[in-house]
Length: 523
Image (cartoon, rainbow, N blue to C red; front, side, top):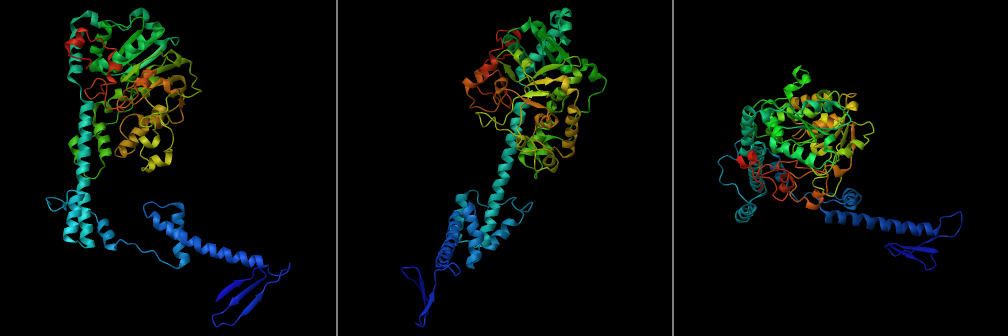
């Protein structure tokens, strides 16, 4: 059958296959079928058929792994409209073999499994394997490589854990020499601060800073950088909290190295009434050893890394969680700035007291935006395990994270909340969940406990990443108010980045007899 349309568009001629001519006259009239409707209808159906054909073609070009919007539409609509059916080019037997789990001992003692992709392709070409044998060989090779990769990753985490948690012999030497000095030298046992300055410890007209550390050298750098960059050091009070074993050498260091006119207080945990009265919630402990953790063949390496970190005495000690109890430890203070012992102060910090927290408890730098996308790209999903229903039900994965290390805490506002109880509640939940709620460290439970109580402050006050970002801009570091060596490459370790370590080491007097005696060098 043929279709002819007259030049005037007033007649449509249909010519059947037998040669009999039939005329269909379309008259122009308001009450009859318009020839324009018929004409445009034919054009529309012609265009529709071509469009469906294009959709199917585009989907074929896109492939299964990269499906565009048009391609996916073509894949779904094209075959249905054209009466076609999509068939996979991959034999079903390959899917069946690859879906089968690997037996526990299937790969043990096997020397016929290809070690590389090149070996695999050579065997496929030489032996002309059928589909089932091809799939079996592929599954065995990939599984073997996965096992080796997992083992190597676990070893990496173990070595890094040992390197970052071990005490360098120089720091151990420093603690022993100072402890000996504390025993033999009365000048190393001075009351800190002196009696006439004790009232300043509870005077809210001073600028109060809190540092919790069992690392004497790290605490010395924080204190020196804080005092040396202060415009009014006589108004600065630094409260140093340490553990019982480190108290004597810590007191000896600051007795022999005063930072006057700044005021230094050194106290151990057992000196606090609140701590000795048993009001501290029981600390979270983890049973088992590192060998048992590493021997687990079912868990991911990142989970094993978290459990290794949890075994660290530092992680389990009260020192690591002390900041969550600041309102109870300093009941007379209304505002403090908490400093980690791996930071360096590079500017006067007294303007922090002029920042209005707008009723919030924690003034902190957010870590989800900034020029350094590697460091400043952290959100809740970076720390919390949102595959766990307990986390997924309560938090938003895209919510911006913030940083520990340099925080302004409004203790008066804090005392009106249940932040501390919330913190310990989630620690218990993480233990019950086999440490699967978040990554290692104390920041994840802090993100949860302070949720809704954080006020964002200018990033100038806290630059992060110097302990894991080797490509940090030196110019940016030098212009920051506080720099933070968060990460494993601490500046007092051999694994520190050599170009960043001088920013920390310049606050150490390497001619000091204790420093020289323990062979502590600038590198």
